[in-house]
Length: 428
Image 1 (cartoon, rainbow, N blue to C red):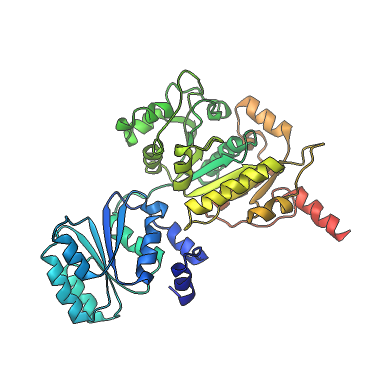
Image 2 (image 1 turned 180 degrees about the horizontal axis):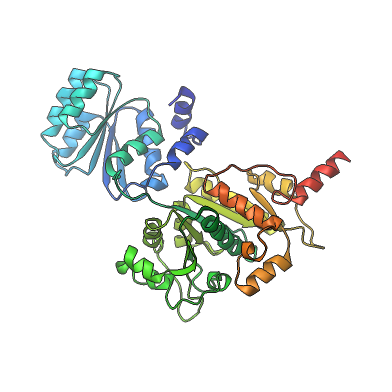
């Protein structure tokens, strides 16, 4: 970690791009208890920041000021956790002696990470021989501590966990669900990769209509019977929409009230991520405990908005809140949809993006015929007209979200006729 990044971490500033990139590759840490004993704020700060990261959401982490001596006093009367993190400024031989005293009051099954201030090969070898799980030389970053914990507790032989993509509209009726379903279809067809779509709008979800499906079971059976959820049970609930695309359909009925706890969908999503490389979450336009948790824990968030004032306000509120909830992740992605609607006053893409601090990854023009025919026939846009410019834009979004390409500024449809017209007006 360079000195500038270290200073920023101490001051509680936003993580650097390199730190965000490093965090994006880390897998969630399982449910464990962690206690840290720190001698300096420079180490305590990054550990406290790590405790708030979504990848550490299952852990219970407590930071104590004071080094190994404090830990020895503490564990004389308290049980030891799954993991102990110790900072020590002692010179190597003093550190080894202190750890021998700590071993007398610690459970031998507890893992130990030592953060020291000496870059000494002999010390490292002695600590490993002594049974210490890892030795890290200060200064450390928040990404460093999460990476070390993940390396110890996440099984490297375990099957890879798929990425989750949460789609939400800045306002009702902006086409977030339609965009989500079409991007999911593109991911599955372009890359021949398994994709699961989860329709989380249990009362009014449209995924079953858009994919022309009428499954007898779906996501409701899973959320109301969490004790039954595993890969086998989930597979029974999935409806096959295409060769590589499966759907967890919403019941889309009002026979019951759909009030859920904040973690209601977490286990379903985690199970789906073990079965497919990509899980597309169609999140309804609501703000509740469970929708907040779902967005906070997603790997990527895509906000769809139309270019008008209420959407701008809502999008800014969402983006600002998600930056607070996900301080170690990149900002949400933005799609401006239904641009260029005849006779409707609109905010230009540049003016829409400026207060948000993020540029749209795509501006999709208003095309009621293409979207209407697709919806009425229960077919995806790519099935209706594979060569259409909007379909090409959807395909590009699929490439960007899966990391196969980066966002590129365009002058035509996709980053918008509106941008092109705006540039022409400025030249005139």
